[in-house]
Length: 390
Image (cartoon, rainbow, N blue to C red; front, side, top):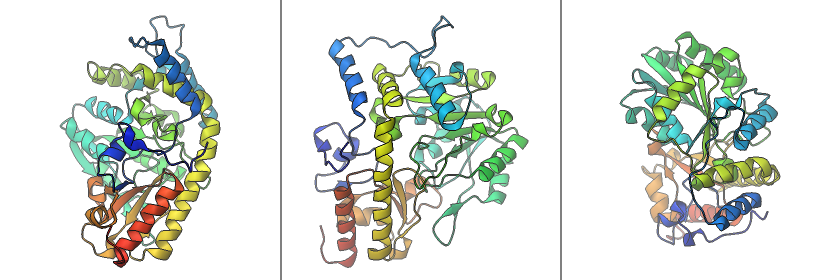
């Protein structure tokens, strides 16, 4: 796999590459500019060549002796990666983690939902979509740019009639991989108030610097019984457009509530999503093993360039994901998103969309060929030094 290959995505239906004019370099929405693993393309090609696009079978047959190959793959994957023992019945296929967040909120019917901004915008939107109260426990930005949990704020948030806590781990956009002691403490506080945890773990395969991901549900059976874990191959293997994810729910009562909440809205995952996910989980590991060092090198290049060439911008190296959270407050631009869009012709995600603590920040996607990243950094430097207005 040649991750340096620059692929012209403007010829496809790419939101990332067709949202802005051609002269704008897009480093915003979280998909990568790399070809997905070849076995995924082959599996999808074989399905298309058949020429029949009927309804796919679900993960669970009326014949309980039959287990869908993909459900079995998810079970085996979690056992292998985390020694997490689940049953195939615990796995529910859904068309994306964002629908999963909304289904989890919809299943509540009442109470408040606790979140930790700055955070992925759909996390902020999901409670409001179900007419639930949003309660914030903002992460604390430390002097070095890294983030920590404000425990007083977290306890206070749980106490505000909270029935659901949405955890984002690894965290998007700040890049934290929460440690075992942090997860244990959050879970303990939630359990003490009978709060269900919905854990968005979509970036859990994209770990840098040998960081280790711990699914919060693996800490203890009691924690698992109060947790909905959302995973997907989409970020890992660049399959976001196929829209396939999984909710892992060991508690049968919680699982039935989740199933009921999705009824009539998202009962199916499309066939190509299921086929792509199966091929990725079965055959994609060698591709992923090559991807991670490339992403880490991109992350290091980005960090070094900012520290050496872009005074006024601060970066805390992300521990996971291919997303960097850039603190541009030192530039005193007021609106760094529009500044870089208009003067550098580089499109980021506006930090304000991530809620409290996002003003003065932008999110940069470094899941791209190195030459693309270098071009973006050069444009940023030129726009800030006033040498050139692109």
